[in-house]
Image 1 (tube, rainbow, N blue to C red):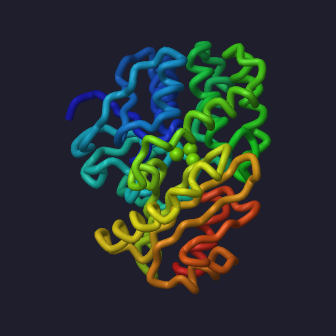
Image 2: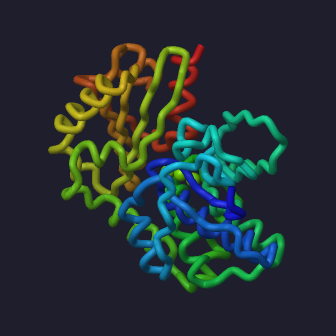
Length: 310
Ligand code: MG
Ligand code: MG
Ligand code: MG
């Protein structure tokens, strides 16, 4: 085992996972005047991550295919289900996250979980609390992550702390109109015309193991739901294929319109009635639009857990 410590987010890395790995490695290296911490990725990055890395002048972190026998800090997730392959045989040093805890480990480790809207909020807060210099470009990258994870502060996951951190990071980054910058990020993310149905589903996809079976829930956010209208049947077809191939109870993609603040749910399931019950709405041909439902973590996953994990 080498001395290197990889800081890594979840599979299907989003902007928060990628930026958190970079920012936390920077913080740790500065705190310890060391060079041991390296950001890594558990898969290929999405479009807005690529955009933000480029805009603020960061290299894409190394993609780690297997964590076996490596020193690992997990950021932006804690469930092995969502982690890089080989995590069962890695040496986990620390966790920093903002999701529900589902983690067991044989040794005591540093474990930070805050009910805030982004992992980058927690890391930025650490920079400020410890009075460690935060570079302008890193502030811009972290700001991007907080804006995406909190849906420009509109998500029910957005805490007061996120708003405070957004203001501070925007100040350091010199981005006066962060609302407009947030919209710019979401517009990049919603250019889906060149993606296949399978790519759309997997762009931000998480597995959940409930007592009733395995569930996969993907989310895409858009500034214009209409952009997806013509693709819905194609996507449902892909959801069916995925469910059958990987033995899911249900596979769901919900497309969130961040202007209307509601989501179109596309569902492939063995139990349409119960999924409707979990969503509190009746599915028609595997589809339903639900106003006000925009967060997987705070709204969708807890409702599914309530119905399918008892
Ligand atoms: Mg994430
Ligand atoms: Mg996050
Ligand atoms: Mg997200």
